[in-house]
Image 1 (cartoon, rainbow, N blue to C red):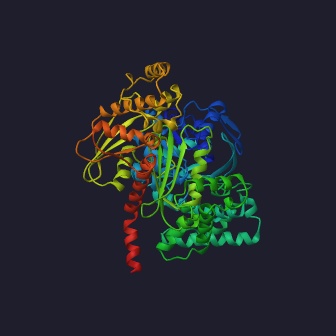
Image 2: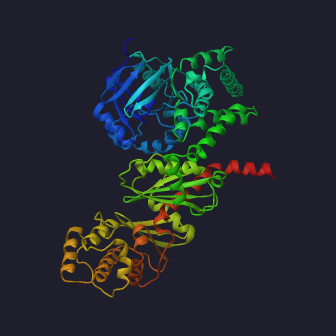
Length: 618
């Protein structure tokens, strides 16, 4: 086929390197496009940089990529024509918001994700006029982090502009893939919706069943009793689709069964997630059929049953009930973090919960609150942890135990974290957390691992202004750790040691290098350790005193430093000649604020539905 455009001039970014994303990236590269790829899995990226992406079975190729990124924002300078999201639906919103920095007049955003309404996640950020949608008719399973066994390709794939405003861009993208024989058809918006329903009905007929039964597609399709079940699930989807004015031909069920028989020895993506006790996309598959069925008063008993089974298996963590490393690890994490140890996981599964994650430079803090805003779970993890699976393990335990309705990430690492629904700055989250306990105008002193912040909240509890120390880490948690190590003082003993001293001199230098030298002089001079500890605290207090603190209003301290160095509060109170209070759980107050913001966001999004339910009840 003759190319209508020079593919080498087309710049495409692919976000998410699961089987769908890797196969698509390779095919676009084969077509001659300038392709950049992005994923958060550092080990996967390392393998791809060293060995390329390997496709096996249906395709047999190894493709090297020169633009491999772990952050979407790194692609900002590429001036992309297309940005493709091939992520899980629950990861998409956070990634789309991170990708807003790439927005331009020419860029088109493509949702390469199956499921009903999955494209709406992207259009909520970039707008319908810029959003295209692909319906994927190929599949694969990972053999290695950088290797995919392509299970089947059932052409064509489909692509279209969801409001028909970018049909030219959809046509160009289809032509690119068609140029190397990867059959892709451009559809108008109406046919695109029909096609997405068709594919979702197909996925819903087998994905949950394969996950619950631990079956491959060929195994599921080889049993007559199972075939009857699959046909009934398909028919429920057809009944709901017809209420949405979507009509399928009379032989649609027969064609569906023919399509499904081509799946072979393949585990659907949702089944793989369920088997591995990961969060699934059931809400956009069988769950959407149930949702639209309720809208039109159409019974969807089998889709509802499988939706609830998948949620029950995921949420209540069936695997954790049996002996095994994963199950025992989940129990340990939850037991360590529960605020009320006597509450069971079933209790928290029966109500909406909200997760806040503060990704700090030194530690990552997790806080979960219930519907009333009361903390029910707290956990802390060293950010630079040698175990790269630790974050994944904690999130797995959280989602297995709590019904997380909304989540929010904050802190230094928030921009590189896509596992939450929203992101907010630590300034706003600190203000929200402290204001929940202490309403009105106030100062907040936040001494963290790498910086010192003074936050001023107005009478309305909103952040009015904030100030930060210079780029030097003097006076922060990192400074304290290095200085205490040089003074041979156990950092956990510093506060109690300082409380037994009346020493009133400080370090002359805030530069960590020079301060270490000065500390050594104190040690060589035989200065008692308690005097050294108090001298260090006085130095930090003087550092804070140089920053702006609004007079005549309450002042509160938060952060990991004050959590582990409570005597610093007295030093600062004396320095400012006023009472300074330390909030409860100061190290978790920012993640608590993030959880509160997640709750507020969820309530705002669901207020109309909640009111309608209350009216029905009354």
